[in-house]
Amino acid sequence: MSWSLPSERFQILASLAAGAAFLVVSGILMAILPSLGQLSANVVEYGKQVTETPPPLTDTAGHIVYPGFSADTLFEFRLYSIGARAILWAG
Image (tube, rainbow, N blue to C red; front, side, top):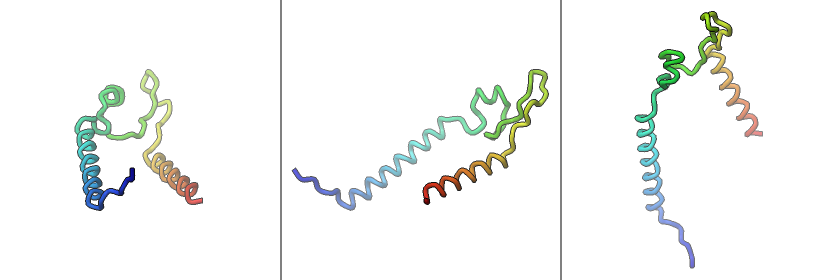
């Protein structure tokens, strides 16, 4: 039994079908899942904030125990992390 390669037309149609399926699934997930900062458990705990940067930690009296960290620190960490991975994979 010999296997033959699919035709070029079939490969193009299969690629287009896979791309369309990806877009449909992504659209469905975007419609179903809550938007950033709107997860009900987080809204109850932290209020409505559209950020992933942690707010300051407070004690029961409301005093700030730890100031949280800024979005700039988070951005720099991610930037340096990507740079470290690029160096690792380039070598």
